[in-house]
Amino acid sequence: MVRFAICGDDTGPIKIGAQRNAILLYSAGKKILFTDDDVICSLHSIPGADPSLDIKKLFLTSFSLRRSWFFDDYESATAYFPKIEMNYLEAHEAMLGKMASQIIGNLPNRNNATFDKEPGGVSDALIKKIGGVVSPNIKISTTHSGMVGDTFMRVHTPIMVSLSDTEYSLWGHSKEEYIKNRNTSVIAKAFDQYSLYNGPVCIGYTLGVDARDLIPPFSPLHRAEDGIFGHLLHIGFPHAVSGYIPLLVEHKRAIGRIPLSDTVKAFSTIARLTMIAMGNAQPIQLDPEITLRDIGQKLIDMSAIQPKEFKKIMLNECLQLFSAFAKHSRVFKEYYKNAPAYWQEDMDQMIEGVEAVANGNLPIPIFWDVDGWDASDEKTWIMFGKWLEKYGNVLVHWPAMFQFRVAHQ
Image (cartoon, rainbow, N blue to C red; front, side):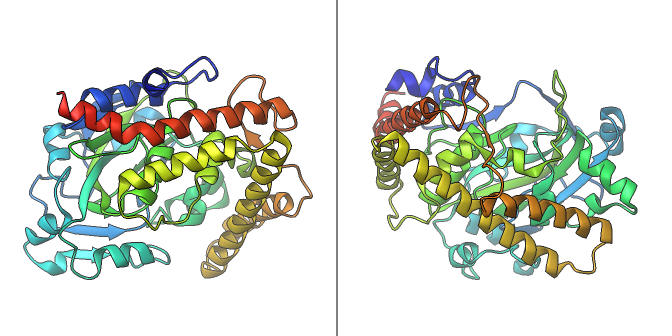
């Protein structure tokens, strides 16, 4: 089980999460900075932002990476943002592991801490967590910076329907510009001021982690291991928030990723199915150790269900997810009814596709990302169930593994 946590196995071709877990355990009791191998530590500032390590303003939000820019090519993207010389580790340490109350307390003026006023920009969970005056035990457990270059996104739909784009850059000034932005593979995403974020999104191209206290494990196999990590941190660690630094690093893939134009094709993935199996409700337990064990046991129990029934349950959960996403998108579109007609038309087309799946008029597309896996094949669901069982066991025993490493550093 320990070997699976840090090495994975041959049932999945992608083992990035296992490598991250090995680093987490090796460095347990310390603060860590992860970077992907396609990240270039060439730092860029954001026009109008103050990247100094003296935090003068703070933004509190339930949306991730609130600014977006779209470009034709890598060169024009990196040229747009001025290069800056500073210590990137110190930039993360300006927030990582600190109490949110400490950050706010050091501001020149308490009014310099502002809340996101966009619809949904501040969730009930954030309001409860912050409560007007930040609770003294709310800690910045992870830190992130922005990126410029090759996109990390399979689709740009999240920008369409969550407004993680405060300047509405995706819309452009014409239908042609909108379509170009929608399909470009070169973007920049960032906050333009130091920010506290409370939500499940975690994008791990650069990721600071405070591993001095228990932190959840990454999924050892498959893509979006950072997404599952963020989901676990959000639902299982009630005193954790994320900090965002107003800086950009460069992201240059060996092979570029062209975003999919069909939202539906990338909606259901192994990572999303895993998170569905975990459950999305906030656990009652406030103790992360108990929560990890409970979620792990839930995955183990799910894996024990007979394959036909297991498949039925998971596909029904997918339908509920598609239905909820369609409803959210319609509400969002109605709120922005004065948006350009071409954006509204694109939203209508996307919503129709999602609703067609939710209503059973189209098969549920699942992006397995594993050769030979097919949602219509019962063997695939057996393999997926075995995956849940293995990861569930990792979650159950992770607190003991982590604490053992801390004690024997």
